[in-house]
Structure formats: structure tokens, C-alpha cells
Image 1 (tube, rainbow, N blue to C red):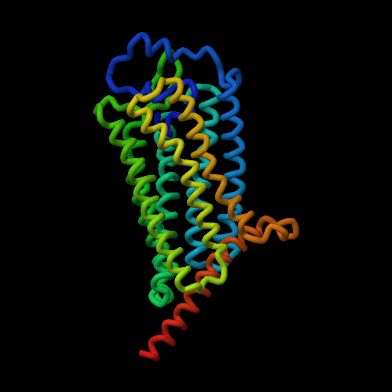
Image 2 (cartoon, rainbow, N blue to C red; image 1 turned 90 degrees about the vertical axis):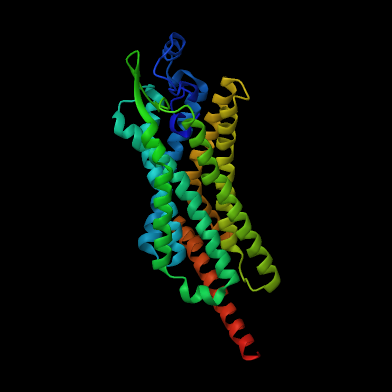
Length: 347
């Protein structure tokens, strides 16, 4: 089962078309005798998705406003602005899937079927790629402070973000190629059509796992291991707040997407019964979707001391969280540069 089709709660990836023929069993499976409002799990997931959509649009909209218009432009605000844009676009497409889960009938046409699926995977890849870039940026700033002070610019950050978005778009193309609208007994289904190749499903699922989860997290773990060892050795960081924020963002992404990728692997190997996989994918995708609205919440509650959160506005909290990141890195670079300069006079 793929993230593409998880919002059709009466429809699993076992229904992906792998041949041109549809058996009578498949036809009978597609007869909808109930609606989402009569199924407890479907209704619960529907409510969750509505909440995620509203909070995600509101929270990421606020972050976009603050990072894009309310704060002085910096490398760090550029990172967080791009993350917020990715999550905002994802949440903006959720209403289509919410409507689909209610009616079990895709009424938005072939283009939107392909586009909404494309956007969802674009969000997945762009989010994790941006987290990798931020982790590498932190690592370089800690290991090579003088070089980072001279070469860490908004322009170069923007180029890296553009490359990350291009790579994310390329890896999301299969959603456009294999996504299709099929009509069964008068009901339209937005689904995957792998009839052109029997190996397409497995290849695409594995590529998403490798490039969208495994390799990025290996790189992130390496970067943060280097950062921790370096900071412990130099003891130059005055504040660990930005590292707490980044750690929280990374752990949140990991925990939100791990269930989804786990059940994708289980589904490919047909290890468990179909109903178990279907339930697991529904829950796993709910976790994955939740990641899109959690980032602004992390900015808020980690941006200032807990005792102060009732005395300041939400906007100032987010600005403080993003701004603190840049101030701390700048302080570290300045101190490291001065230390390196002093050391060079003694050689």
C-alpha cells in the first residue's frame, strides 16, 4: 500500500492494477456498501486529517509570514521558510483526499489525482532533504567555523534549497506516471496502475524507502555525531537550544514516517494478512501526515522558556525559535573565528 492511496479507506494497495483484466472478486470488492461516517476507524482518521489540515495551514502559514516577512533574512530563516512552504503545500492538498475519504468517489479528475499524489511525496522528500542540508550546515559550522563565516550565505543556501526541491520533484515523478483514475461500477478511484511492469511497485517503494528515509537518516546521524563530539571537545557552545529544535524536528520526522515505511516493506513481502496491513498503513499514514503540522508547534514550545510561554505571543515564540538558531550559530562562528585567529599568531 502506498501513501498515494491511503485516503481511500475502502481501497488498499492490493487493488493496484497489475494486469489489464479485473476479476469478479475484484469487482465485488469495490462495491461500497458503507460510507466513512459509518466506519469508526475511517471517521476517526477523517477527523484527524481535518485537524491536521487546519492546524497545518494555520501554523505553517504563520511560520511563512514570520520567516518570510517578519524577520531579517538569514540562512537559518531560509531553511525554516522552505520547510514551512513544503508542509503548507501538503496541507493545502489534504482537502481533496478528505473529500475522497468521505465519498469514496474521486470527482476531481485525472490531473488532480496525479497532482495531489505528487505533492504528498514532494513534501516527504523535500522535508527530509532539507533536514539533511540543515544537519550538514550545522556540522560545517562547527567543524570549519572560519570557512563557514566567510562562505555561509543566503544565496548559496537558496541554491541548495532549489536543488533539494528539484531532486524531490524528480523522485516524485512516479506518482504522476503510475497514478490513474479507474471507474468500477460507476465509482471513480484514484489509484496506482502498475500494469506496465510487474516490478514497478516494488522498485518505487524501495526507492522511496532508500532515498527518502534510510540514506538521509544515516547522513543526519553522522552529522550530529560529529557535532556532539566537537562541541564536547571545544565546549564553545553557549546555548544548545537550536540543536534541541533540530533534534526535535528530526526525531519527529523519524517517528512519523517509520510506521509508514515499515508497513510498506511488510506489504511488499506479504508477511501479514491483508486486513492487518491495511490497518497498519492507515495508522502509519496518519502519523506521516501529522508531521506536516508538528513543526510549527515545535517552533512555539521550544522557542522560549516554559515559564515565559504564557507571557508572550505565539508569533514571538516562533520568531524567537528561528532567530535563536541564527544567533547561536553566529556567536559560535564568531568565537571560533577569534580562537582560530589567536591560535594562528602563536604558530
